[in-house]
Image (cartoon, rainbow, N blue to C red; front, side, top):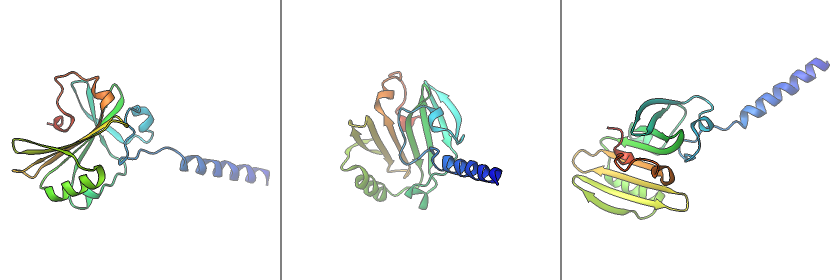
Length: 167
């Protein structure tokens, strides 16, 4: 009986500890945290390293609203082993939907034009985060990056903008 009680307690402790294990939330990246802190389940798969930035696919559970209408490319970038950016790329997107969702989530952006690209950007200095979305009026492609400014400063000045780095 005593063994059964000890086994039950150990089993309960196991289930409680796994329930409270930290899992990565792809929608709310914890910028500046180390890969080892974020990747307890082994879901980050490195596929590229360039100009001091390591790029990873996230193969774990991750669902954004955009998944209901498109198949986005979603990549996470690390500098010196710390989470620096979440980069997204889509094709055949609808600019009105992109604009509507972006403004609803981030407020009014700063807007500029760069050739065929409409560029919307936001800064959230209290969090050290910058968000940039580029929409190509000719191809309907969208590139976006949410990145952590304190780590951006560690890169060389010649490094590409995060949203353009997947090329």
